[in-house]
Amino acid sequence: MMIERWIPGIGLARTYRREWLRSDVLAGLSVAAVAVPTGIAYAQLAGFPPVVGLYASILPPVAYFLFGSSRQLIVGPDSATCAMVAATLVPLAANDPARYASLSVALALIVGVMAVAGGLARLGFIANFLSKPILIGFLNGIALSIIISQLGKLFGFAVEGHGVFRQLYSFVNGLGQTHWPTLAVGLSIFIVLRILKRAAPKLPAPLIAVFAGIAAVMFFGLQGRGVAVVGTVPRGFPAPALPDVGAGDLGTLVFGAIGIVVISYCSAMLTARSFAAKNHYEVNANQDFIALGVANIFAGVSQGFVISGADSRTAINDAMGGKTRLAGVFAAAVMAAVLLFLTDPLAHLPVAALAAVLVSAGVGLLDIGSLSRLYRVSHVEFRHSLVAMLGVITIGVLPGILLALGLAILKLLSRASRPHDAILGRLKGVDGFHDIAGQENVETIPGIIIYRFDASLLFFNADYFKGRVRSVVMAAKPDVRCFILDAESAILLDATAADALEDIRVELGGRGITLAIARAKGQFREMLYSTGLRQRIGDAHLYPSVRSAVLDWTERARDGKVIEAEEVVTP
Image 1 (tube, rainbow, N blue to C red):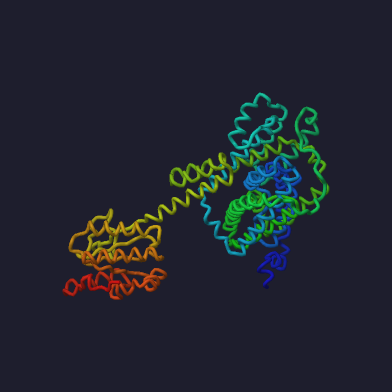
Image 2 (cartoon, helix red, strand yellow):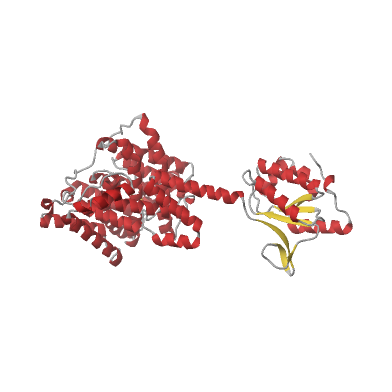
């Protein structure tokens, strides 16, 4: 059915099996047990009142159920996305909470529309362009930013300034103001979280930590001893409202939204693909792009903030045996019940407990092992990862990622503009033609140069190609009469490179050397025809294989029938 193609959730509801229900319900309850405290904590990380984290956790999983393709992925507030939201909105809001909330709704809607448009335009492939080293660096930078931003709340005093280094400086200077009861609560909960993560990873550690914090505040009267608590959490759902955003804000919001769309989508796809591979099925990248967009629109409509794929909650869903996306809907229902009936206990939740949850999440994001492996395997990719990490914690989340991406693209272009090439010869007793560099007993063929350029011929490497051909010809013996270009690796040929190839043909002709091309195919061959190079080179010098070219020229040399280069058609 066509409607099921656009809204896969309808097909899932139609084919849902009764035996899946128990697993999905249990998984949904487990996800909600973690999503409630983490949603509250991430709301504070993004600069919102705690309840906004619940608003952003309820409707998005319903949207993903309808439009998504992963069976396990849970969408909701995410630490990296929250950090990017804060980086985008703080400069615009000017410490006005109402304006901050309105800008957040606008940002979620813009991100949602962009993601839906990206999915409809079949741009899901962009998830392949954010390399793993850059993602590692990004997440490490985000982890350090989260940890340092929460130290003040963990120690019970205010930390001033924006940016990791300013906050770290302020924290060190303020250590003398440490509120010891607050530190005791926060540190105890942090230790419990880390122990549970290692000893009992299936338990909802954040929920246990939150209950422990609330119980400590109520039992020991910690609020009276100066331990800060969350305070009143509004019951029920907010009324939908359109954001009040000026035209001057749109440029910044759109720029921020572009970065958030790319990062949040790539992060969500990384999680979705990982669990799809584990459970032996495929996800639809373009469909998930649309699903993430609709989920963000739902988050904006419900007065929440930008969401993404949540790896920790997805892992819990999978570990508890969740069979379908309906587990996310059950989790949303539980969180809605909390918002309607259980907000009173949340008022006693210590801020230090939320800080402990966030610091623990930050520690979980740190991936020093992958950095070490990159250093051993590839210094270049290690540097890209390091630039992304340092960029995030110095110049900001979005500029840091753009800087790392820019450097990676420049490096890619640098490599593509100077690809590997080879002079080929024969190895006695071995079929085919082989690179003479670094191999013993590979001999070139008298009177013939066989040259392979291991890349497409395009505008950015055309001059390098010409220079390399000249160098090879200059170093060859003077009896050379044929230059065979092995075009197997050259899939593409553009107009600039075609002109360079014509220049080489003319230069070789001036030396009495004929240009021949072997194994031209696809678009490369089509460009030889459309640019007229085929006529100028001559059909007799276009060969289906290097072997046929070598045999032809060897026979010509033996029979004394070698055509002089000057006889080939010139323009």
